[in-house]
Image (tube, rainbow, N blue to C red):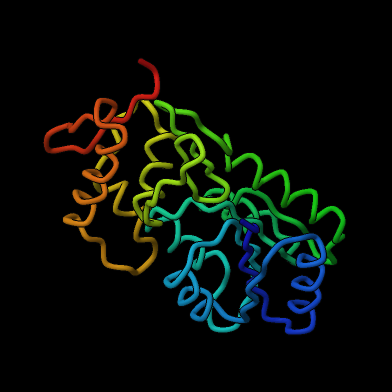
Length: 219
């Protein structure tokens, strides 16, 4: 599954240049020119990385990323900025940006930064649990040669559990992860997804009453 990058940059020519370069590097891109459109795109799909300009008309990349982080969206984000003031960069990192580059951007350096940030956030791409092979990169799960049908959101919940194996994952954290930004979470759906996963990994999933769930890989 190709990595998909949201490019938020109001300079249309530069936005197009970035998208063309990244697609040549093997990524899928969605280019937008304002924060409102970017938020709408995040509402409808999941991205693997955000490439954000700080200076935007009517809004800025800082407030956009703040909104995402407050909703529980932990997707890696890189700021592009022409600002020289240290305060803006520090604010961006405090909000939750993972990296930044100053304009004019060296595209080769940008490609290296993107690869490093995606690699750091992805973690293991494959897991083997109870005879199941879980391919996190392609959102597929197999038992032997047979592929197991599992919807996208149950799969995202499984990946969340695997990432936090042995930890109690609060129901609120699950809701934020499965329904990012302005989407309305369904706690009933979470129970359904957990039930689906228990059919595969029942002994490993523990209900923590009133809090959430714990999934343990280690026996």
